[in-house]
Length: 462
Ligand SMILES: Cc1ncc(COP(=O)(O)O)c(C=O)c1O
Ligand SMILES: N[C@@H](CCOP(=O)(O)O)C(=O)O
Image (cartoon, rainbow, N blue to C red; front, side, top):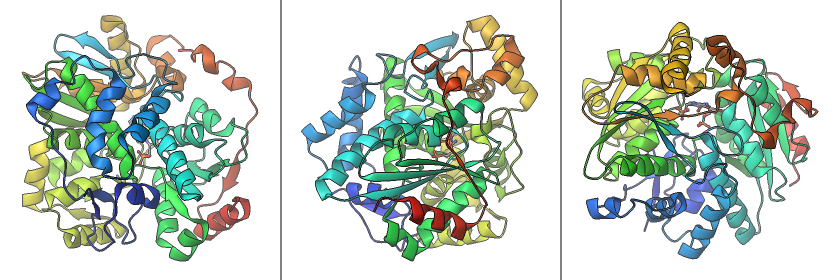
């Protein structure tokens, strides 16, 4: 029986579908599988040459327990990826000898978030119909989660969606993707603050049980285990394409909330021969500082040209800490209390455990621009600034295994930075060419929990 437990050790144990609809655990923690399913070398070898959808089924199926039948889950996967603009879904490109790019931006909103969000849109729709139930989804975004969520859930009868984004701190394309949809079950809320404020208010709403139960709150940030799970799949497709299980592969991941790289860690725990997992940060480098010094000290979010990674309170790091502390929920709860007061120091044993799995590096604004310029010149690949952060850090971590950098967004989502670096202004794909002409619908909100909760209660269709 597949079960999910909280990183803080004192919330009820849940099944996959329950954990998916619950979001944040009631003790404030994040759900993780009680045990990580594994795949043998033969299982992994058998993935070679399979369509992305079939790999997705084989990798994710063991996590679902009895929540969905095989046929139900296959149908859900097929529908989730049907709208992607590339048959391979997550194609690999070679940048340089031994260095590959995994392009994760061929989904409907042009960022890697579509891989998980399209899937959980289908999972939610199926499960809510089965239960004859509805939910209110709240999400925090630095730009990409929000647009992917609105795209995945717009027009669904059983769901109202409210996305908090930091006013003035997302790109114009990201903002328009959230504000252009006209369906009345989706709401873009521009909050006066930065991403960490948005994420903190979302967690506050989950911790306000009266509100949470009253509106049937659900979450689609990487708080939700299903989000992380869907992202495990492309580690398998990439590594197998480069010779796994017979050869080890390393990954560099542009990182903010630690969800994407944590998915890589799960792939490794499942048996995928991953050599190094490299955390690549922009100037908001708290994760790099922590892995280098053991101190996780929050010192304010600085706006950057890779805005989706302008994060200091990195939600999924809690999941990594849980394992690094030997799955001691009390220890994690203590660290999270210290975080509320500004930060914490990771114990020597836990730091060593983290370093066994993760390397890290930082990329400045100048280095980001220079990497976009250089990569276009030498590899004919136009990078978005987040992917450029990854490529820069990967170049400093090349070893004997092939390196895959995850390209997390399409350059057209961040045309100003790309044009500044290359003189080329990337255009949107034809299917969204009218985005700049469409009217916008957005509500400005103060960074005030009660005001946000009141607005949500007024607007939901419960
Ligand atoms: C384009 C892009 N790259 C990288 C990241 C960082 O991913 P994660 O938050 O999973 O670490 C994000 C935001 O999550 C993003 O939107
Ligand atoms: N970069 C993200 C921030 C939210 O991360 P999530 O993975 O927890 O949803 C974004 O683009 O919104």
